[in-house]
Length: 450
Image (cartoon, rainbow, N blue to C red; front, side, top):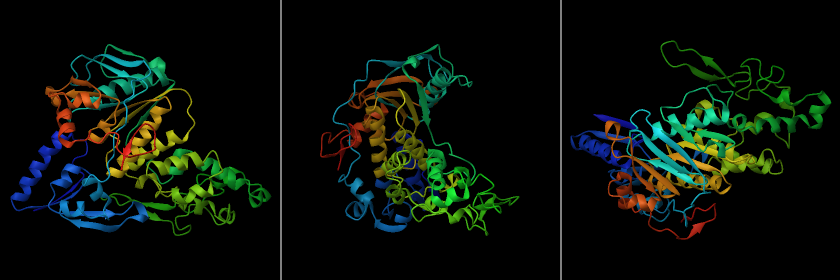
């Protein structure tokens, strides 16, 4: 039998990953073949053969960088994956842990799902990570109780929070940002430029060109949602939806505009030699110098580059984005905006689908948010993210009926010293906390070791 698995370790604690890998190894030993797409270090270490693609993402990837046994890939200097496996590059850990600003968010008597009437204290002004084996109660505490409770307090949301007696400390924040892997949009009209808000000022720039002013065109003319400027054949979507009845519907490129979304008249207007369709076709890295002096656009492009999305075309349809890309676009949108009061950010497993290098960038961004005065709360299994936390709340000890209690609380070092914590044992085993204070790159308080 040939088994093909696409990132099977998503959402699994390292303990559960080891159990999964034992099962996969058993399948192989019984004469089967397994092909796995995976970023997990433990999975790669136990592979018989690795095929490393890259070297970068998007059009800068698509080539075989290295292949062979884990030892062969580890020894190949051309492989970015190999350098992380060999320890030449690491995500790194901060030189010091933040103590917080003295305040706290407190959940009193949490009883959602398998939570056993627990009290949880989260210091504000820190990067706090909720850890624990799969099914231990992390999502119940953070998403069902904390996120919904804060949304009701700060934004008058109607969705009720999970069962608990009291939520304290919400008054310390002006707003809440929940960043998860929910799609940015379900139609081609949604893309990175529209979600981050930079398309509006770009349309304004086009409307201020001499040619546009001569014609009396305002910014609306350069929206693919407005009838005057968009392609009439596809209504500005760039493609036609073909219903396949018993199969999934597919989008086919529009024959009139060739995916450019706009009509011919609109595309006669150029800004610095480019049409609005040309701009939407630019990758983030290529667009940065074009708008470097535009204060409403440049910070967003810088943030997109910083989270590792420099390869992403501004107009790439949201329907083609991975969950990890969607989450990083949300994060970049937050980082690119000027801060407006204290904010609490909640992220649900942000490392899903990310390579070591992308995790490194993500960690740097999370530290930047905390350094500017915000509070960041993350549900995560990735040991490198846990090792970067100021404060860890480890739930468990097991999943389901065997979980729902607080096993350990404290710094990553304190969690690693707790014998009852599965997370702590894996922090010790992997040596994730070793090398603190090594050669670092600038980037928030995080010492990102090379």
